[in-house]
Length: 106
Image (cartoon, rainbow, N blue to C red):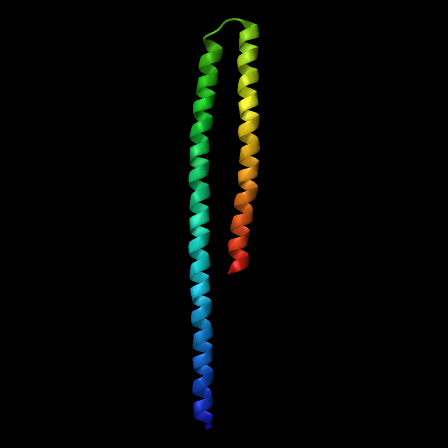
């Protein structure tokens, strides 16, 4: 084998490795953007839900003058808010894991 053929082989191996790396990087970037986009739209929806829930809460509280009824409305709203908060924490953890896994797989 000549010195020139050896250099050409080395260049071919390096080019193949670079192409493999580039494909993996593009795949990881695409997956990251997909997961990030899903999270973005999830939180946009959650903002809308919370806004609607809060509007309903104020409407319900202002439509009654009975303190016990207002307390009951507040307790119901707090129960729902606690449940939504718990779901948000779980979603945040799962999303963080998914985004981390995209980075680790690259």
